[in-house]
Length: 47
Image (cartoon, rainbow, N blue to C red; front, side, top):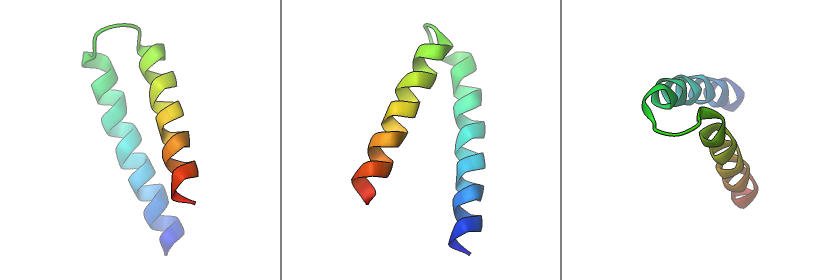
């Protein structure tokens, strides 16, 4: 059940981020890299 919930939140979050990237100033790839690093930090910190 946790696995399914994680996938659901991941899809919802990625959809929101995709919409935000269209409106944020600057290079979208920079935002993508920044969010990826932030996600990895959060993932490692939760362990």
